[in-house]
Length: 231
Image (tube, rainbow, N blue to C red):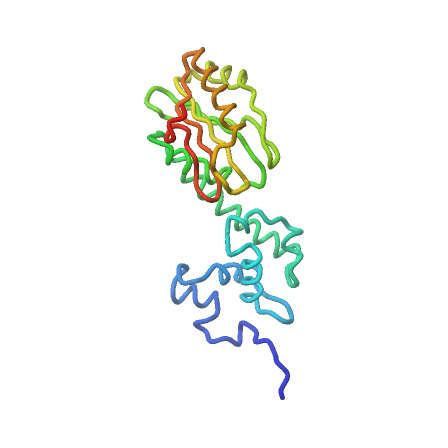
C-alpha cells in the first residue's frame, strides 16, 4: 500500500488553484477558505493552504466576524501559521472592516434604527468588548459628529452624561442617538441598558436635547429602544 502524500496546490487542476481560479472565474467564485489560502500562501506538511484555511474557519464556526476577533497568538496555534501569516489574515480582516466603515461614513442622514445599525456595525459590531457611542444630529437628522464615550469589558461600560450634554451644547446639537454593542451576541436590552437609557433621556430633556434612539448591536441583529416604544 503506497504512503499517502499531500498534493501541493501546484499539482491541483488549474481550475482548482485559488489564484488561477480567481483569474479565470472572478473573485466571487472563491470560497472563504480559498481566499484565506491566497493570504497564507502555503499550508503545513499534512495540509494544503486551503485545507488549513478550512480548519481555521471551522474553529470559528465559519463565522468571519469571529475570525476578525482572532489575535496573532490565536492564529499561531494552528500548525503552519506563523507570525507573518497570522498578521496577513488580521490585516485583511481589518481592511474589510475599514471598507465597511468607509461606506457607512458616506451616510449623512439618519432615517431610522436600521441606519444607525448600518453606521455603527463596522465600528463596533465584532469587538470583543463593549463600547458606547453617541451621534450628534441637527434638525434634519444629519450627523454633526460621532463620539466614543466609553470602553468596557464584557459586562458593561460607564457613561458620563454630563460630558455628553456638554459636547452636545458645544456642537449645537438638536437630538442625540446612542449606540453600544453586546459582544455576547444577544442584542436584547438588559436592565442596566434600560436604566442608563432613561437617565440619558431624562437628562437630555432638561436641556431640550431629545434622545431619539438607543440602538444595541450584536452579531445576531440589533435592538432599538425607539422601535420597541421604550423612549
